[in-house]
Image (cartoon, rainbow, N blue to C red):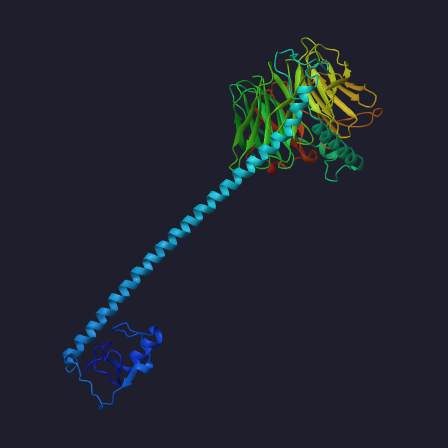
Length: 522
């Protein structure tokens, strides 16, 4: 008799009183404890319904296939085959699990990238929205104000500027507050300012000689007519007759980038400190804002076409958020640097008196401009009003350069009749250098004055009554007889000079040539 569950002869047989079926005791006990019913009939069943049967000792017969060696080998082979099949099935399951995990990780990585991109787009959108909200008050103010500026004063609504362009939003009260706060902070710092210990001495400047010459611009259109230096990185920017601006790394002697986009000569180039922005102005009537990228290239972010004649100068405000362009169309424009929006376009109403030079006062509330008729005009940036006019230049040619001293008291202007020094406290000319000059520049400390003419002359600054002594005269080695621009390097450790050939020349102490690697001969 066999167990109704296992089909084998039970070792401890029991019988159900309800169904009369025979079971192995351990199997039926386990089934009842788990299900509480008969495994065959499905009737409710308890252990009280199970009756043990007394039998003799059962000796299980051995299977025939285990009674011989070949039978055992066959059994082992079957077990081995079963084991291999089971192992193969497990490997397949593992492979499938790995594929699912890899797919899940790929989806997670893709989701993370999408999230990062969306966050970046969200942040950019927020920045643009904040910028738009900041411009809204300016636009509203322009609608209600009696805007368009003529002769430094506002005209009635609906009046156009002399060039026929639309009215501008105007400089909002918020921006004026920002300019005023910047002025207060810089004025306070100036009172505590001391000349740096690392500044080049008079003896150093007396020993200056040409260290290197770098051919940056094209041979068929030679001439460097504008220059600026980014002191934090010691990078020099030059604007040329060949319609390009070149960014030059002075320590390595390498050209970092060439900015191409203007269709005529680049008349002015300026760095925006503490940013990767560069401004260029051109005779093609446009101003371009360039942004640097991580790979060292520069892309044109804005092309500004507010002017109807050559743009002669750009100058950056001390906040590094605003800048001004000056043009031969008799106007200067005040821009927001981030958006490229022209907030104000200012004209003084004078005929044939275009602007040829412009510079912000170090404190940022005063703008100095030179005109094509040898006149220097001082403007209040907040009201865009002409607050002073200097007519000390005797010639009829243009004022080619204006430069404010870091002390905030002196203004230097250059024209074909020479250089004039002005006392801004008394609004008068206190010293003149009578030789044709093309550029004039104070060094960053206000200790030295450089003049580009038929040669390059360096003076020691002094007070109104004291003599301004000539320290050094550097020759113009271009052979053109016209040095067009001059700039002092950081701490006046070198002087950069541009002329009407295509070479940038560096003057400094003998022995410093190793800082100008790969320099070309002059």
